[in-house]
Image 1: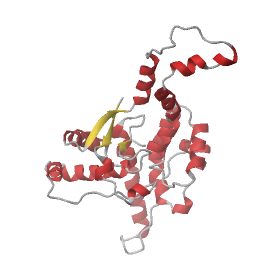
Image 2 (image 1 turned 180 degrees about the horizontal axis):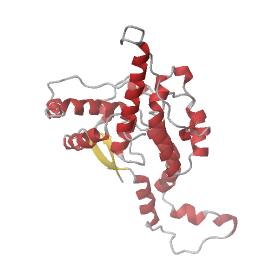
Image 3 (image 1 turned 180 degrees about the vertical axis):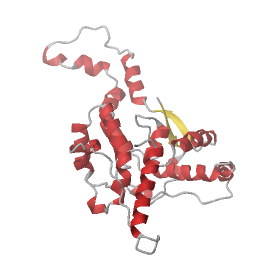
Image 4 (image 1 turned 90 degrees about the vertical axis):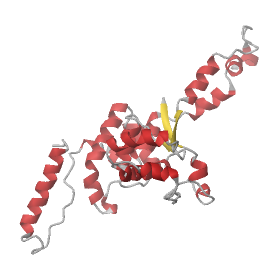
Length: 272
């Protein structure tokens, strides 16, 4: 399966300070606007939007378990980028081919582990064809001899689908990122199937306007949100501050108009 990563990430977007950090809250980006690559990127009718999408990709890639890799998720690269950044998916569908042609991103096979294990299954060993030893001497001998060391290591390092979904799609967009271990444990316990994980992510996307409108300490913990199956809640209207009297002619009318606009927006997005 083909995935993408930022080309030459370690050389271009890491420095002596970032290499010492386990988690990045910022990413160093070159600022030479006379660079030919920059000029090529913005020389497009949607050049400004493409520049913004590229910066969003760098920020997202900097927070992945393996820095520089672009999350793919169950819905594909462009859908995952759109969900995390809250930018239109059409924007990423347009800019990804351009970035690839400019060698700013590169494709790679993210099923290398499966390939190693598959190749290992066909490797002959000098002991092949010999009878297996019995008793204490032969316990586990055939398995250990015929399994290449690389395949053994790969089998241990495979990331389970829940953890991959959690790290790449859920955690980056949840509005309160606390108690990550407890949240992952809840996800493994409750969100065991791809269908449940997809439903939870769709619901979270719809609930984000309400959740992000709350004060940070009033937002639910991710573990509580998952364990309580809060993705089954109906999305609430985000908090709308009522204009003071005189700002909009009449405070009550201003509030009603705000609610009507919110309903209209949701209707146009197909969420009502």
